[in-house]
Length: 107
Length: 405
Ligand code: HEM
Ligand code: FES
Image 1 (cartoon, protein in one colour):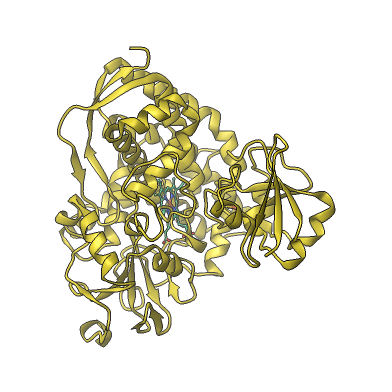
Image 2 (image 1 turned 30 degrees about the vertical axis):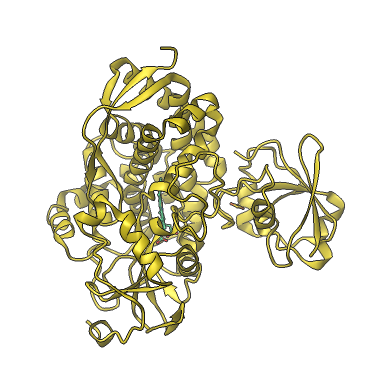
């Protein structure tokens, strides 16, 4: 299973194994990572699973849908060019070592 | 009735429970438990429909619109065999791709960015409501709080005409009763519906809606061709139907929970930033929207049981939200719980489009209560309100202390 690295706003790092096909959001919430709320349960409707992806790794991710793009305009922490919704990132083998930075706030 | 209904040939466990009866409304939990334990799908013999009460099956049905469609109605009536009692909803009672076009318009009007703009005003109104109630000390938390607060913010946010707003709650009661069987509740609701329906129909017209509100935003989508001018009023109607009574029962559920679980109320007062989580957990715990139906578009197997094409399947959202297979200590109200994944707002393509607005209302109201109020005590008989879909109270008399008392 690919390893995903979560970096908290205070710099603390946690590494998790997440099964291929599972979303980064599901993997993180199922294993108790704080900082991802996921109020809509992964339906791309809430923007409380917001993360910042390590810029050099953005190309590993699936393309962004129109819905995700629109939701990112309403995130609680500022939207940046490397902002994504973690429920929309299904883990692939190529994502081993992906670095996911958690925002200050989700709501 | 189709043959499938009279001779189901269903191998599912049979239950004679009536989930639309007073007895059930008073205490759904025991019967929920029986239905969950009977099997992954059960046959409700009184109504000739299959039902799912476990989390896994409810979640699966909600997420498979191709097999379990909404376009034949999300109540017990099958629109393929009978005429809907009102023109079909453009979102609730449609399937993709038709659904998605109308839904996109609502998504925009009720987006996280739109919520940010509303937050300050909603929070100020919450402070006012709580201050007023504290001055009174004793009040009925259903009309004076759970109804009063949403009514003080939502109609204006939508841009409803000032006159006639007393129709809002009765109209919603009709809509949510209509999803049930042809029982007394539904018959009485429909018999008295005409004046409410007339007011709502008139209020959904472009000229009736105040500029800057959700309603005007929906009509503006006709200018860009996203929806037609005929469709706009119907889409506005969805917010009249689903925008108030749902949050009334959500807020009522939260206040009832906090009054019954004083340790959770203390925890919330100690850290008012838990207000949003406290609201969400109340939506899981009480599931203000209890049930919706789907209709099968093909023969399908659920948990080893063959279900034919064109059959209604009832989803018990409230039972799924307390399924011990999915939740630890399901019958405890715990504001620190990870609630992500609960189905109180549904799931899949039809998942509640107003969920962000509902959470905003719940968060700012419970937050203001947590900062300003001390002990809450239930001070009189608690009475339930009966509705075929909505779960909530008619009366919750309480006495509250100020925080510093
Ligand atoms: C605590 C409050 C609320 C609860 C528990 C709730 C519950 C639900 C549920 C369970 C569904 C799914 C229906 C289905 O799958 O067939 C739904 C859909 C919907 N809700 Fe809510 N709701 C709430 C508040 C609101 C508010 C405030 C609005 C409007 C501003 C709203 C508007 C809608 C609409 C239009 C749909 C249909 C969406 C679609 O079919 O795509 N709801 N709601
Ligand atoms: S979990 Fe709601 S948008 Fe990702």
